[in-house]
Length: 364
Image 1 (cartoon, one colour):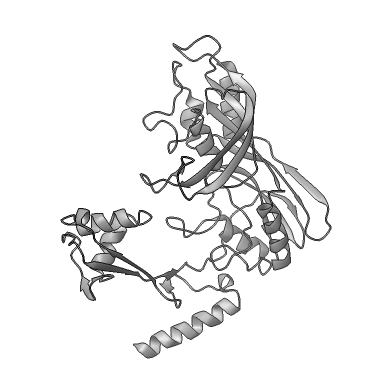
Image 2: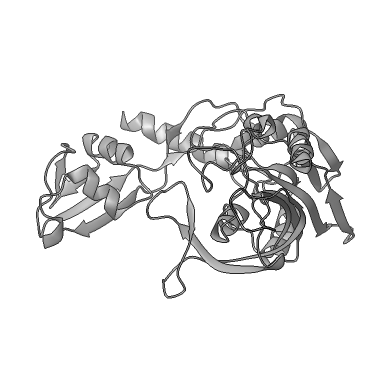
C-alpha cells in the first residue's frame, strides 16, 4: 500500500512538472502536500453542543454535511484520540484537532465547447463568455467549463501560472454573468496582465439591470467585502468598525430608468439600466454593492428577493422568467497588450436574453 502511494506521489510530481492539466488523468486523487490541520479548545459556552454543528460554527467555510463526513471519516481528534460520532457532545477544556486531507483538483480534459472569440494572438485570447458557462473547474462543475474549452482550442498554449485547475485564467466572471474576459497563453503574458489587474489599471465596465434606480444617479460605492457569516455562498458588506475583509470600489452611473414603482412616490423608477465600472474586482462585487444600495439586480436570487423574480406592481414579465440569472453583462474590457504595449479595448453588446429584457422594460 505504501509503495503504491509513493509511486502515485512520484507520478503526480512528474505530471505537475509537465503541466498536469494537459494530461488525460481522470478523476480526483490524494494530494501529496501536507493536509490542512486546525485546532481549537472548547470553552464553557461550547459545552453540550452537538459536535458537527459546533465544528461548522468554528470554521463556517465548511458546510455541516462536510464536517459530518470528516468526523465520520476519523478526521477529528480530541486530546489525540479520534472521534467518529458527529452527534457527540462538545466538552469544555477539550482540545479538538481537525485534519482535512487536501485533494488535488480533477485534471481537466479538453472538451470541444464552442467559443465566441473576439481576439487571439500568440500571447492571449479574448472571449465573449455566455451566461451559464463556469470559468474554471470547481465544486459542482468538474466538466464543461471555459478551461475545458480552452484546453481543446489552445492545445499546448496556455499559461501554467493558474495551475492544474486554472491554466491561463487571469481573472474571472460569475457563471451566470455574460461578457468579455482575457486569458493568457504564456506565463509572461499572464504576469503582465495580472500586474495590471493588481494595480487596478484594467478598464472594466458592466451593464446591470436593477430593481429601482440608485440615488444619486451617479456615484462611487466604497466598502469592504468578506464572506458572509450567515450564508457561506454570499459575500457581505462589513461595518467600518469590523476587522478583515477586502476593499471594494465600484463607480456607477444610471443610464436609463423604466416605469413607476407601484404605491411609491411619483418619480420612483420600477427598474434601471446602470453602468458599473470596477476599480477593484472582488467576488460578486457589483451584485453585493447594488443590493447594498437597496437595488439588487433583476433575476438575482442570491442577493435579490428569494420568493419572486418579478418587479413590484407590474404583471409578470415573461422576459424576467426566461432570464434565469442575474441581469449582468461584462460589456467592456481594456488593457495594455503584454508584447506590443498597445492599448486594447473590447466591447460586447448585450446578449439576446438581456436585449429581450431591455425591450420589455422600455415597454413598461
